[in-house]
Image (tube, rainbow, N blue to C red):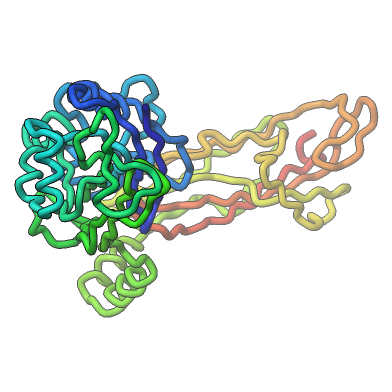
Length: 399
């Protein structure tokens, strides 16, 4: 006895199919209920990146909440990384549930079956009684049973005459069932994004012509409506709204606004160990701005020559001879931030510095120049403004 499950994702909705075999024998009703509880509580699925990490897909119904912690079912706390069945938008339980007919004899049951008096027989169905009392399959539904009991038959005997006529004469019963639950809290609820999975029964029947087993297989056809968002259509409609709605366009233009800023120098000449204070002014009386200073590239020359080609530094950041502090910050309205631009003298034992071969012990005698980018942004704006600052150190002027 036990169960095996399959979980599918359809249009971002989770559907679970559980095939189970519950405890046998007429008197084992409580054991069958406990089997369902155990399967529901402990069944877990391997986590896939295709499945959401939240508590189920959107739109889990009140029925799902009932099933999340039904009576006498403990929550799954043994494996928090895997979802339980309550996360599904739709669950279908099927298999040999083994619920029998009670309060009826073998001969009485055979007579009612031969007369196709299924309405009266349904009143003797254990599963129907247990579900009505809320003791099992809480929140789930079943289509109306209009077919003969599917157990127990003698193998190879066709028709209703094949019911067990042996020594035990087991009372015919609807052991084989299909139950389901979707997102609906009420049967009349329509499919929508708030109730994204809605199903309806097309047929529910037993294959009485199958004789290879002592059970008759049961099949159920469902029509399942799934509400989902077409993201391409949504993007298209959003773009159309942005293009045509003047209020939104004005709002977006306002977000693109960057307050006016200024700097006190575009070119800086440094001697050895000299520090220059670069002032960044926020000229707005209302909005703060955010700045970030980065190194765009460096060039070197000798004997007072003009700087050569700038080499991008990328992730290398500032060269070792230049210190910039603080390299980022916020400037309140009508305020000024001072950024220290400092030349740091150093000697090296390294073979290469900034891609230039060095002797084993050397003093860097080259003239050097870098381009600093002072990027300025506003709080919500995707745009930025950039000030360029050339910083040059001449070895000859530093002596």
